[in-house]
Image (cartoon, rainbow, N blue to C red; front, side, top):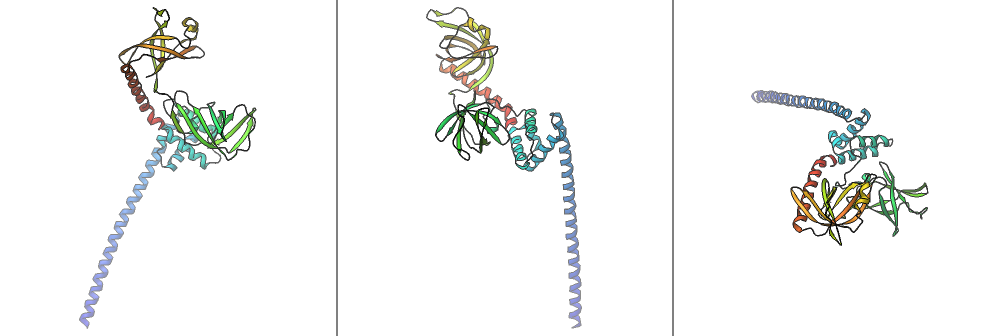
Amino acid sequence: MEDKAAALRSFRAATDTEITELLIVIFVILFFILTFLVILNFRKALKLKFLRKLFMKTIKERGLSEIEGEILWKYSNKLGRDPFLTLEIKASFEKVIDLYVQEDPNYDEKMIQNIRKKLGFDYIPSFIPLTTTKDIELFQRGRITIDSRVYDASLFDKDEKYMYWALFDISSLPEIKGKKVKIQFLRRDDAIYLLEGEVVDTFSEKGRLILKIPHHSEMKRVQRRQYARIEVDFPVSIKKISDKGIEDKWITLDAKDISGGGIKVCTGLSSRERLNMPVGTELWLSFRLDGKQMNFKGVVVNISERKTTVCYGIKFTNITSKDETHIINYVKREQQKLRKLVKNRFG
């Protein structure tokens, strides 16, 4: 019995020693893990502090205030977005601003507009499609359908939450709060946009009826033009064609945009009477595009005047399929270059 008891005591002592050693090993492992996590978090905090300092320096270089920088830093991190990309990409910037507007009831409207302007996000080039109603330009003309009736309208004003559409030639409407209306507008040199919105309020201002509608990003874009076009700047020589034949004198104008279907040329406003080219005037065109000489006929289809210039929209009439393809491919290449330049900026 004594031998058994001694053996049991020996076993217990050995077991206790093994448990103690195991606990020590676990403790050491936990200590190293904890130390690693502390060091990791410390390094992360240092990195975050460094990035924040660098971000605020970048903010000052962009002409923004410290308060503006703090807002962009705070809400970028809340969204899990890189604050530096918020300064470079419009889509990221707008999402950050949306969160700021939603969470802060005292958000500063003027400050947001100031930031957007300083970062260059207040203007969208015509070759970049609109993705949100916030980007619709003020005074954009359009048409609004209410209960199957269509009204001419214009974007009268907008803020960070709402757009305000003014209806023309109407001073009152039946109660339409809470109703959905359809909005359609043609964006210059782009496309037709269609969207729906709920009227949250109506009011009169300067004799016009204003519809208050929340912003949103659900817009349908309908391509209007048969051919894509691109802005250009090169000389175009033209000769008028009349019943008497082709005039001998070449006249040089400046091309401003071109597509597979036509070209817009401009000159000084003082030259309009001398040129005498009303709508319907037939022309012979000659210009060089991307290393290829182009020669074919066209007809003036529209005329537009500005303060100092007059521009003629000319439709190609006898262009060959080979020349048409050359122009279309040129436009595509130039558009790709432009899109590549602005892709990172507008998202």
